[in-house]
Length: 164
Image (cartoon, rainbow, N blue to C red; front, side, top):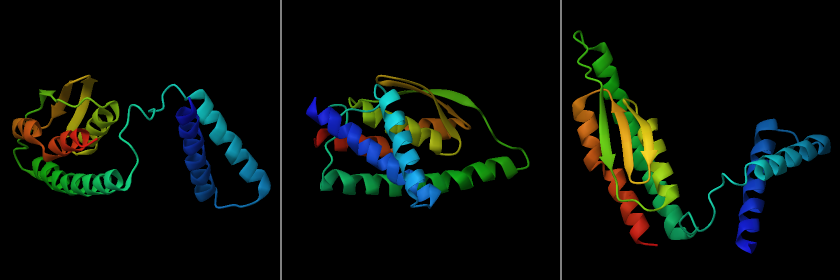
């Protein structure tokens, strides 16, 4: 129970600092409104927060791992942008939309959410269904859809999960 409250306090502080960064004001009325908004958002969405038992521990190793993951994701997003631009600008537009079933052996809820969002952020793919170990992904080409089955980011998520 104590860890749960620490999680709520941490999320509240992150939201409050985001409010301060976006508002750009340090006047006390705006700070009070920002803090109240952060508290209300956390309170009314507390059942949707990923609890400490559902996510990997926060430590230096996992933080560094996460930065590496995001840099690899950014690289894949950049490459996919060029691939989609090529498909759209090609005179014959060789798009073959398809739905790809993807089975992943990832146990952590946080890792599955991260994977689903990573797929959707990558141009040319969209996570349509994410249910336990089964994902359904829409891809612009058959090659891109099949390449997801051996996507290195899935292997990175499995590796991180195994190193808890």
